[in-house]
Image (cartoon, rainbow, N blue to C red; front, top):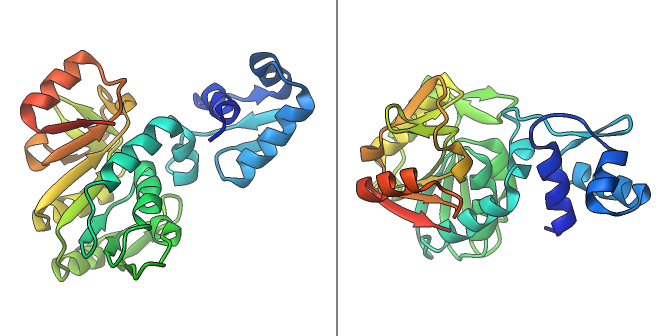
Length: 246
């Protein structure tokens, strides 16, 4: 991603409207160039054009969340991809890092990717003999995830090795947490079935707490995050699990 695009996304990542004039001053480029950049970023699904500027709302829409800390998430995804081998059957849960992750592993031959997220299933390039299994269940339009009893039943009847999970928050007291109560049930099921659990999250999530508990640190085998992780959480996670810095 161009450095200029990353700078634009950083300005709008707190959810406020960034005007063309403001972005022009920050980037030291003409308003015409800013408008062109905003059009491209909107086409990529990273932000929304509004009168006089653009906004990026931190909702559960994956394409919006993917734009926040994009470069860090890409490095995490690339690091995670190094743990996938030809012939693997893996489960990829929801999360913006996981979208970038499946794009990376689409280059690996003869793997089977099981997912509970329609957006992620759509992003997988099925060349190289890749198979995609999208489980059924109650469809959540905004997050494009499937949840509920049917989804749990599907997971019960599938076998897979490694699991890659996205989270919204982590604290020492609460463990890994998320916004979605129903998604928490799916995460619990996946973890119980998996031999090797990876959490993929950028470091901005550490210290944040959300309504639903996904799992404890003892439930996961690896945590992959970026270099901006605080020394406090780096020390804590290193002692509790396999912490991988991308």
